[in-house]
Length: 74
Image (tube, rainbow, N blue to C red; front, side, top):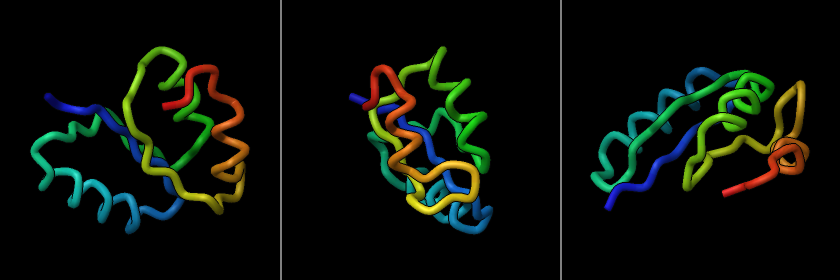
């Protein structure tokens, strides 16, 4: 069984590290990654994931504020 995931972090290097680690875990499938949490909200409105790797401190929206925007948070 595979679990779908997405990554949200305003720092490109952090996203690269997350993507690299996820690619080494056979049961995870990275659906999308975002530097902008507002773009992630749009994606998650139409796509469901099992897991989100989420930065807590971002300039536009904190990770906790982001989670509150989701109707069906993973």
